[in-house]
Image 1 (cartoon, rainbow, N blue to C red):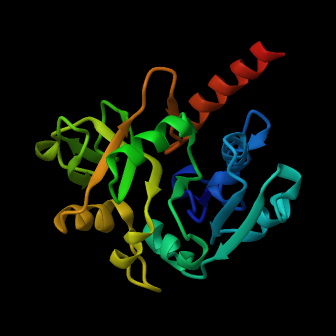
Image 2 (cartoon, rainbow, N blue to C red; image 1 turned 90 degrees about the vertical axis):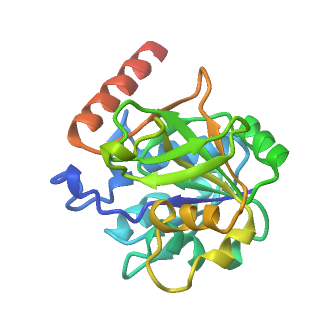
Length: 241
């Protein structure tokens, strides 16, 4: 299986840290966030990884090279103008010939990929969204699910009166190649704002995989999130010494 790590964001809310660094390259426990994610994917046997780039692309390329030192093979996809989360996937359409993963490269996650893929294949949908429970959903993409974990509605950054669920996008998708027909070429397009609602409108089967006990996500949206995640991982590193 192949995976795309989305790493093109500027991370404006984390400036000045991100003035000369892509957001996924800021360090946590001595390693860039992106390196944690590559190690995570490699640990699950995923060796073919694509990374999209925009802000300070040379920082990522100089650090990882062709990926061989990290046990993977990396394909880079530079975007002179940002294409959005879905537009980045469309640009790499020829790379993905079968079921593939999309990871938001600026968060950290511990998810059982084997269990996730079993879930995805059992439901036979066009895609599966990994979800985590969050109290404040105002800055997240929210999925409403039926009793079979099928997504019935997806709202990006809902208003207070639109909140019908607290299960939010964790930034990991399992997708079938049929999704490409819904993404236009060479223009910015976003999963949360455009593609996921369109898939539902067209009657495609989209499912939500809720993170279980022992599975976690550490999101880094703002500076206080970054400080919190650094403290968690520093403590883990100390406990493992």
